[in-house]
Amino acid sequence: METTSVLIAGGGPTGLMLACELRLAGVDVQVVDRLAGRGDESRAGGMHPRTLEVLDQRGMLAPFQAQGRPIQAGHFSGIGLNFSRFDTRFPYTLTLLQSKVERLLEARLVELGGRVRWSSEITGFEQDDDGVTVQINGSQQIRADYLVGCDGGRSVVRKLAGVGFAGTAATMTSLLGDVELTEPPTEPFVQKRAELGNFSVLGFEPGWYRVIVSDYDRVLDRQAEVGFEDLRAAMVRIAGTDFGMHSPRWISHFGDAARLADRYRSGRVLLAGDAAHIHSPAGGQGMNTGMQDAVNLGWKLALVVDGRAPETLLDSYETERRPVADRVLRNTRAQTLLGRPGPHVEALRETVAALIGTEAGNSTVGTMLSALDLEYPIGDEHPLLGRRVPDLDLKTADGTVRLYELLHRGRPILLDFDARLGSALEGWTDRVDHIEAVLPTDRWAIPAVGEVPASAALLVRPDGYVAWLPEAAVELRTALTTWFGPELSGDAVQSRSNAGE
Image 1: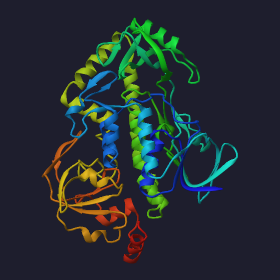
Image 2 (image 1 turned 90 degrees about the vertical axis):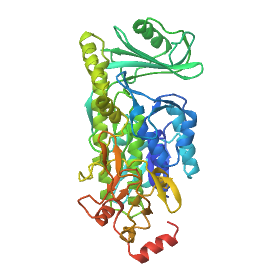
Image 3 (image 1 turned 120 degrees about the horizontal axis):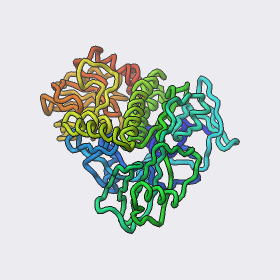
Image 4 (image 1 turned 180 degrees about the vertical axis):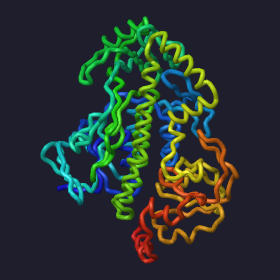
């Protein structure tokens, strides 16, 4: 029987990002997927500012930027948002097809010593106190310490684990196609409302386009098959033209069903991405949310697998990420409602557009959609506690460095501006890096909060969120134990160091 520390079901963006995080931490991981190989379907079309920050924190961003196209905007049910006002190095949406995102993530996984095993369908599993025995293709077995389901909205792992998936059924259907157009719109991105529905046309690469046409109060079964002529007829009926579409590469359909897993963990089985939450793609949040699930879970699971932190650390994954998905479900339901045709909705859209058009409205909705405003429930003693750390330019003994560059190794950082806290890390030097730096400013800007007083120190988790600062109600040693496991004796720390850990 094969063995591995973590078995990941699903080779999409969530599963690949999680595998990269685990391999970066030195964890033995296998990724299995029921498909025969990587497909060319475009699927999701872009990455938001927070996801770009996450990739930057791992030193992975450059190839994504090289293949993508930045658009300094987002939208809420087609109502424009201005991301350029946000305090981030990446105030834009990077348009990049999911198929390309997957290939770039898979290339990174291969660099880290991992790979995807195709044509490998999970057909059953049994778990006990020590691990999970997983059936592959009905006959093969893999024994893993943990199994993570990243296998999409119809997740086999979720169903076999007996985890409920409550929510709301679809109320509409959108047809989608990657096609070539002989009469394309003059603008690179068009999104319009019509009497019977709405439609959009987005140019991805020279010569071909993503077209979407939404038909409200018409619900197709998820298993229903649609073809090019169905897409073409729907576009003519709703938009009045098919823009001369031909040569389809991919035709699909989706609805606005919104469902959330009852729990994200069942013993040694966990869920992430679409396996844990599905919703309308309104606002382009799905792939982004899944990749950020992976980064939240990855470092925690690595510490637990390595025996440096107790299993209870995994409970914080659900505590932090399930409310995020719940918020996405609620805002996509709102966007679906705002997309409906008719004079009453049109009047509501005018009101919402006026609110979003204000600086406060743009900030509230835009930072929510882009996940820049996330605040994990770590504490409220300081506005930065539980929030993403700003990417500060730091002056250290080795020169000037960006804070996000210090996170490339995927390790937590104690950022010490007073050079007084090094001794507090003696039992955690195998897990936490101590960085002395000059405080660059006396105030920090936090999206959705504004400017706040700077602190003399920051304990930054591997996912870039602040776990402790001097204003916190708990002591530093308590925070270190909570997030990164108990301290080790000097001999134990030295033993790990000698082992190359």
